[in-house]
Length: 260
DNA sequence: ATGCCTTGTCGCACAAGA
Image (cartoon, rainbow, N blue to C red; front, side, top):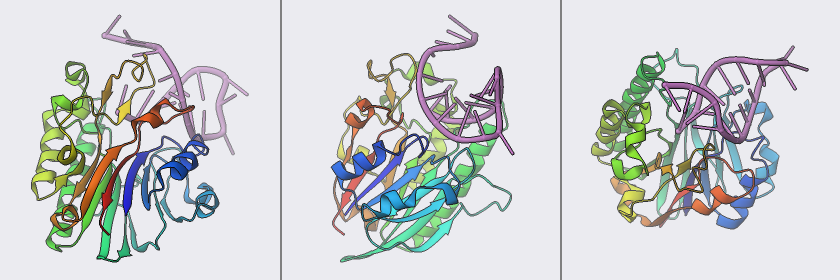
């Protein structure tokens, strides 16, 4: 079972590229972020025609997450627990049944947090605290569980082509990196780093200043595996070539293959 | 240092992204 995450930066603008990648990669489950669409406007029929079940947690103009799955999506939960006042659509969670039992997964779009000094940075850190608390509860269930998405965190200097350029950015602050590390240390395996320690392994390249052509990227889209999910892992990958397609998102798909 | 691009918005410039 291949399960992927991809920040598509707007479903309307990516209505050709996303199906093209689905046909090529044939993932079983896809976690989409930044659909920038309300639920009613999400083009579910396009994906249903490709054999996917669709669940969305949308918002007008910004944010928004969605799940595509060839197997039925069960026990869907929308929104990150812990703050009823939070109206930003950044989290959706569901389960599928497999030959090796149920697999549960959360699709997240973690706040960017820039600029430092604004209210956006503490919002990011608070959101991370809520994510970590929720993740701890899921880990205690001792079942296959994955947290996939755009974390907006550069974990380590090796995860940026030019780490010095990010020292004043919310994505690379010690607080952001520390909370991400705390999350992993709850007991997750970070899939991509378990598969490769190669530098130059990025998932995002800015649209500006020829970042893609220069491979001036960062690695901010991650897949975390509970121990029970990690036991099932066959491999993982980053479909970097998609960044070179016409009208691309600035992020590319990241995926894991599970024996499930 | 700033903008570099791209997206969505009841647009005719702007906010937000990372």
